[in-house]
Length: 320
Image (cartoon, rainbow, N blue to C red; front, top):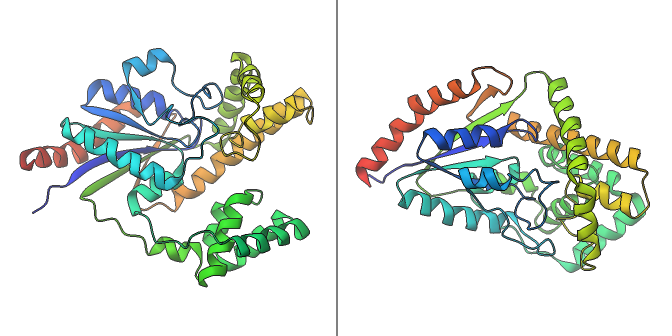
C-alpha cells in the first residue's frame, strides 16, 4: 500500500487573517509554509501584496514568494510544478506542508491536476479580441455565462484575459472550460485537508479590507508603484501590475484618477476579489470552515489538526 501524504491548505478571502494563523501553527506543529498567492511571487511588490515582513519570514519562512521579476509571467501550471517540488522537499524533512493563500486557481490545479487544454490559437484569439473590441468585455462575459455558467460565475466580467481564454477553449474544442476541468485527475498520493477561514459577518470583512488598503497607502504603496513605473519595462498589460491595488495606484499616478477615487476603487476591487474567493470556496469539496473572528480560532484549528491530520501524518511517517 502506498503511503498517504497529508497536506494542509489554509484558504480564505483576502484580509481574513490567514498569515497570522499560519505563522502560529508553524510554531506549534512540524509544518512549513508554501505561499499560494499569484502576486507574492513577484519581487519588489511587498506592500500591495501584504507580503509578510522580514521579522515574520524569519520566524516562519514562506516558500514561493519573491521568485519572479514583475515583468515575468507566472502561470498556474508553473505554480503546480514549483509547489510539488517544495512539497516533496518538506516531506523529505518529515514535516507537513502548510499551503496558505487566496489564489484559488492555484489550489485547484494543485489538487486536481492539469488537463490537456488546447494550445493558444492565434486565429481564434484574434477573432475573439475583435469581437470584444466591437461589443465590450461585459458582453463577451455574458456569452461565456451562456456557454459555461460555472466559469462565468468565477470569472469577473472585466477579466479580459480569462474570458478570452475560456471562449477560445470552447471555440477550439466545443467543450467548456468547466468540462475540461472536470476531466482533470491527479495521481499523487496526497491527502488534502482544506481549511477555510472568514468572518461570518461580511461587514467585518469589508471593514478590514478598507482598513488594510488605507494602511497600505500609509505604509508607502504609492511610492512602491512609482518605483515600478520608473523602471520603464512594466505596463498594465502585465499580470503583476494588474494585481488588485497596483492597477488602481498605477492609474492614479498616470493621472487617470484622483487620490480619493483611487482609494475607493482599490477598496472596491479588493472587495470584489474577496467575493470571487468566497464563491470559489463555497463550491469547494470537503472544506472545513472556521469563523476568523472566533476568540478561540487557533484552539479550534489546533484540535482539528490533532484529531484529523496528525493521525494520518503518524501513519505516513511509520511507512516512510
